[in-house]
Amino acid sequence: MTDFTVVLPSGVHWTPRFVQGIDEEKCIGCGRCFKTCGRDVLELKGLDDDGAYVDLEGDDDDEYEKKVMTVAHPENCVGCEACARNCSKKCIGHAAVAA
Image 1 (cartoon, rainbow, N blue to C red):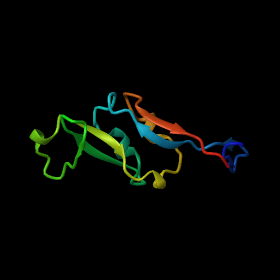
Image 2 (image 1 turned 180 degrees about the vertical axis):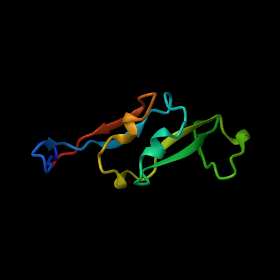
Image 3 (image 1 turned 120 degrees about the vertical axis):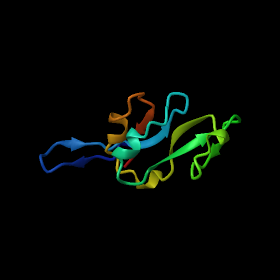
Image 4 (image 1 turned 90 degrees about the vertical axis):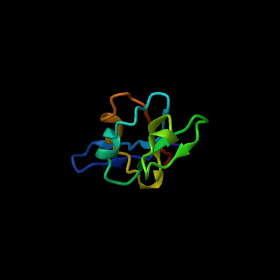
């Protein structure tokens, strides 16, 4: 099966690659990817000692070990990969989907 591909107005064939996940070991929770994405795909969470996600609403530093970005709404991704291009740690994974 071939990847989903579109033809841009310039005639160039483009294959969107949609967000698949974020490597929590590499992610430093800086928010660069979040600021880049206008589609509400990503969400910043805290990771506690056990590796469980903690909401950051109160931002109580005692509840989590570190902040990481998560893929909250992958269905909103349009495959532009802007988040990955702005990630200094290169921890965001993308993949094409079959047509």
